[in-house]
Amino acid sequence: QLQLQESGPGLVKPSETLSLTCTVSGGSISSSSYYWGWIRQPPGKGLEWIGSIYYSGNTYYNPSLKSRVTISVDTSRNQFSLKLSSVTAADTSVFYCARVSMLRGVIIDYWGQGTLVTVSS
Amino acid sequence: DIQMTQSPSTLSASVGDRVTITCRASQSISSWLAWYQQKPGKAPKLLIYNASSLESGVPSRFSGSGSGTEFTLTISSLQPDDFAIYYCQQYNSYLLTFGGGTKVEIK
Image (cartoon, rainbow over all chains, first blue to last red; front, top):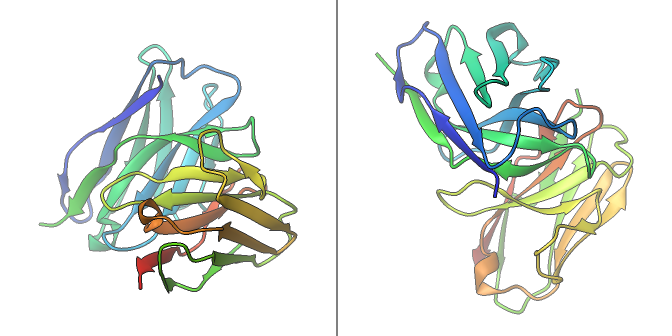
């Protein structure tokens, strides 16, 4: 059974860079049928797709966040990572890592449990 | 960018009711639409993909329809486990967009 687990600091100071890692187990991140993505959800609000990465390193980013986002992949560790720079309180969210399947359109079929990141001094 | 608008934002219903949620795209997305269910404190769960295809393991009371810019998610007979927030998501290209969500609450 595929599992995804987010890890990283739960508290980040304003203007700093938020960094999270997603570890994939029960399957290979190098599969040709899937991208790997990050989605966030501010407390009490809706879902926002941040971006996705293919095992080769090809990336797609949300245009509204593109200038601040970097997603990278480490196939040797079966992990992918998110960096979000110049954070403000508005970036406080639950961050989910996920598998983006291209087998049935482009949909999210596996999610991590989510991790709350608070931006505060 | 493609914008997704869901309505209503909140829906009050009773067990056994037929419930319909609408999602509109700002431009045509063919049938490239998925629906998710999210319960408090949990990650979303995929229900429907390609506008009308039921994900494996999802009860048949859930159905999706539509194409182009207007889509619906229908729950034929609402069950206690169905009270949750529902999101649509478009995938026209690899840039994904979610709708704002519809909360289905107990009447």
